[in-house]
Image (tube, rainbow, N blue to C red; front, side, top):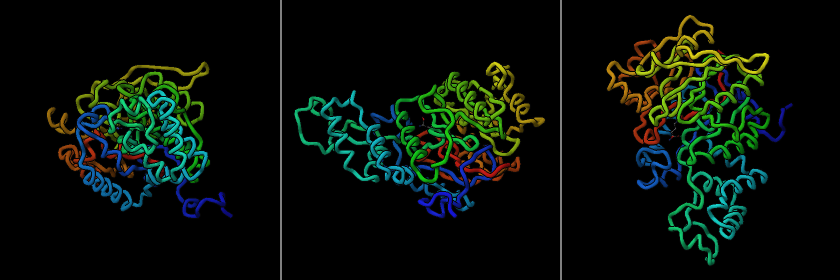
Length: 411
Ligand SMILES: NC(=O)NCCC[C@H](N)C(=O)O
């Protein structure tokens, strides 16, 4: 007898959502193949939309397909965000809620807001997903020409619905901790609407129907790129450009309350674009090893949070590597660093050399361009599966940023 009669058998036998570590064998991952939203990027809007240059979209798609192929070639089930969204939007409650998230009344005024709402209510799930991800311009809004001042005063290429080019970085918008999913609270206005889409996917996609939630999109800012599951029960949370101290504390409280963690390390990182998330400077490559930007190796510190009878006990700060090893119950965390000389290290850190995605202990996906870091990883016994990322990298994210693990086997 199947647990959910209306859920396809293949999905009922798929790995249950659960992630307890960074390196447990990866079973299922959520990716987003870049689509029309990347075609919206221009030299006028790329900074605001958090891209460093204008990607060649066809090539970015090819690179992403190759990334997905590496994962499927290693037995990983790849779920795609766009397809998952279309499945979720087939439910009319999700469709109505999604359309509402796209209508910005403050920007559009009553007449155009109503026109957009009415139009979106008529499009099918795929058409709505296209607008939600790729955005819509004033000239694309198929409403009757009225006397709307808003329409007259906007350029036809201005956005009625903003595109979401950073959906590519599925790591940041949601994160699985144990058997619960935390919808992130994204700090940058250009990404804020992403969480509404993830919220709908997790609420209405049959695969996630029974998934419990941790934390919440309306809480203080926390982005998934800052959240590292160092070991079962041990979470490191970067605090910098994106995740705030209040966000880290509140995620820690939520994880303690739900029994998902016994220790949380809050790790201050520089509030710069180059180090926007903890996973831009440090990712796990084995049960007891990280690849880390050498410039921070000796200065990275951590506050240790543990549940206490009165709430949460905060100790430190102490050197990150010591605090992490102590929390993980190991003698020491091995460090493989990015390049020998400071200039190479800085270049490869910028190009996401530290941003690896572990498929299993000692097996990672990395951008091929970070030659020095990759060879240092191999010297340390790590298998490196190289992918090209010349176009994908224009959004400033690597293999870890572009993947949200949904299921990993226990270590
Ligand atoms: N975890 C990550 O470091 N994600 C990369 C996000 C890049 C994106 N363009 C952003 O600025 O948010």
